[in-house]
Image (cartoon, rainbow, N blue to C red; front, side):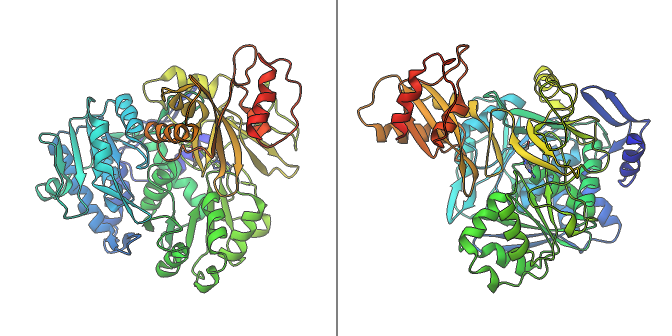
Length: 605
Ligand code: PRX
């Protein structure tokens, strides 16, 4: 049944060669459509150009300065072909990793598809990550090529990406940097390394034959945070991944061929890969890409985008909805949002009151909210309402049920299914084509993190199934935070903080945040008492920014004498969070230093 279903779904794509075997399941590794040959760029572009959709708009792009571009499928096809030829000429080969460090501009999509066309493995790094984070990813993939732009726009500021890249590539494996120049301003190119995107395109052949790639050839590596300090490079296949995102996109949102679809994510995250680029373009959807935040140049800009482009499917995150509710509740009524038919949410639990506001004020009570639970590792949606459900079947805050052939369960510590209504660990019991191929260069870690705790796939989330079988996600069951829908590991932050020479030890404590969902405070033990604590706090914030990026900004820093630890030396982060929330805490006698708690209470006060 499982294999039959996915075989039918795979047949909806165009394969150069069919498969000999639907699934080769060597737990925890799944190979799908073994022997099949396919190409993601061909699937997203050539298929439509061959079917007479040349003039259809693939991308409506706009930035916060109001600059606009409309790119047809044919134009996108041409650009991707040229850039793919250019990359080949530069020396990029099938199987090479190409890092992308780019803002939300059409060239970002073109770069992903151009890599896919020639069988290069793209690895997109979110453009707000620091040079150190970028460098770590370069070192982990040993990439020889990097594509970037001179700057990204952010709330009226030009963020100098080239500067970050220059720092990051120094003393690494990177041999060539391709630069998209967005201004006429002069820029110093590093001789022998930097190449202009435009020069590559101008001198490239018009057509680049799409590589006939093995179904299990990696399409991309995308890094995500985990419980240890080192981010994990999540690898996805080509054939299985494409089949999965294509199928789940249709199950959840319906047939979007004739719709205008806007996903507000960034290509630096999995949402951008699966549901800005691959699934929508495979369907021949017209997508909107807006390079900008909801609050700039004014607080109604997102409503204006929906109105101007007549967006019919709007897929965003609870953190963005909470922000929009705060900043533009008054002005939303001045915009015509009647084009909207379907709303979507991703990244974290959508609180019922936020769901209601989204439903009433954005969707005018006529659009279903498709709350999609999934992860970087799952490739695509796992739990989500289907478009075929009636609005009355949705429950605010629940991602409803698993999609087709996803076998989800909730289990206790021992892996035994819990009763309905009881909290437990979410697990997935059967393989699916979007399942990651593993962690780049680290088989053991993949097996340990996801497959050693239970006999099934363990995503690291708590959940409850209610008496009607609806799934309710309850947040992470591991030491990771979810800030504005982005996963970040507590130890990643702590490891970064101790790089500041004044910091002896650091602990992250999660706190609730009205807009970002979650945030964190940092508890720091200093090497020496500081003369100027405020200055030191600023320095630590800067250290975090340099080491990780702007996402890692603590709400507050507390200097403490010691951290609460178990006798085995494990930092009690949950206890710190409880202290911040002024909750009564239980027995602390098992701590190494029970007095530390009282002292921390005083500091917090
Ligand atoms: O904890 C879950 C939460 O985000 C995690 C996955 O993070 P990431 O790989 O960065 O992917 C985010 C975009 C898919 C999950 O383990 N999460 C994601 N979507 C939801 C969610 N929690 C509750 N409801 C959701 N709809």
